[in-house]
Image 1 (spheres, rainbow, N blue to C red):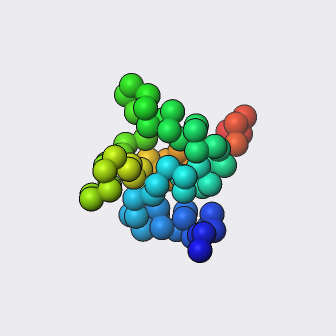
Image 2 (cartoon, helix red, strand yellow):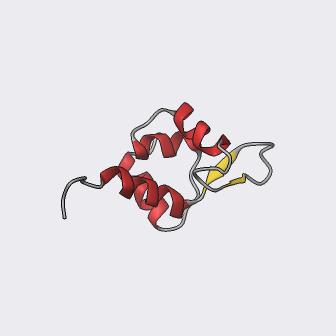
Image 3 (cartoon, rainbow, N blue to C red):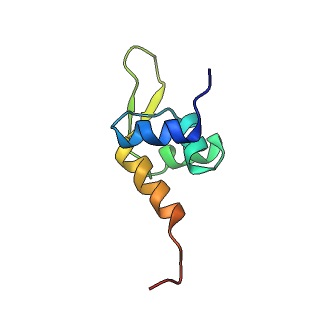
Length: 78
């Protein structure tokens, strides 16, 4: 069963590493955009290779929350 955006955000805030598809839902962007963030040099999001899964990546929860808060920032307010 798919998790809601609220559940995923809560999971990141409690320190759970998220998959790129989950990060895409939280940030409101495409999975491709998240993969580009991971492939950037240096990566825009820190990640680790998920243990025992080949090359599947998981995104650092602190970076996910920071990116989310940056997207929610209202520009122009003092």
